[in-house]
Length: 188
Image 1 (tube, rainbow, N blue to C red):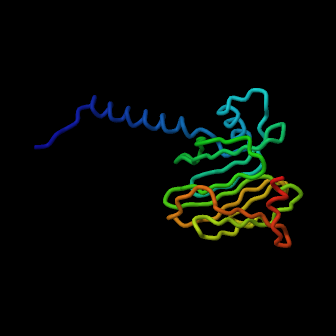
Image 2: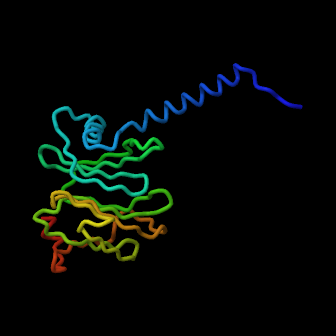
Image 3: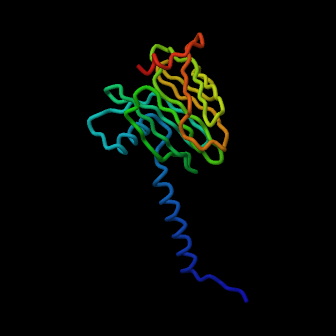
């Protein structure tokens, strides 16, 4: 026995599909440009007095990480997710970062260790992180896994083992150009 849809059923189904697209696209409405990114961060954290200045960004799969500063040079970062329409929505914002922020994050079926912050006087060349007993080296120089703007702000990352359950490393060491440990000097 065949069933046929009448016109009103088809119209209802098409309306639901249309509303689903409108709803989806209303969340992913941030263009991939500095002005819209800065504006979206300000709107989310409800700051009317302060200005947000884009400093650096990097994309990992369908995520975009943005490092920004306020007028008083305090730093913050935000995580965006790219939608099917190639626009973004904000997933999270953190601010009041002192010098460097770092953590392991999940993106789709992979895990990454991301580090972002300020590289005062270009003193930091590389970073060693020990996460769940595994050692990872990250280079601050610009490459496919690291980006540095104005030689002052940077974002870098590396893929870590999926079995890694901890978010923060057991050991985190900053090195200069001569491979000297400068961690304590930077965090003073």
